Image (tube, rainbow, N blue to C red; front, side, top):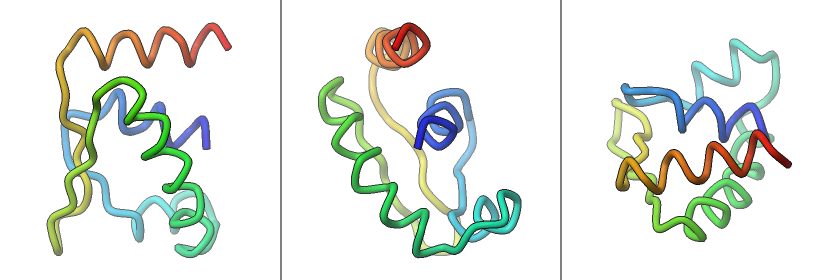
Length: 76
């Protein structure tokens, strides 16, 4: 889950779960299960993931919130 959090926090582009699953050699179902925790973590920082069909998911929120989440993640 940590890698997934970092990937969203550091990406300027949309991320497709299918591509990530192939890259990490895990099933899409595994990533979807992890996404529940990822969304909960992002909600604590007022960050949202928006999903667009055929484009993937993109993280939205203030720069301060993104940096705070990333900092807390790196220090935990």
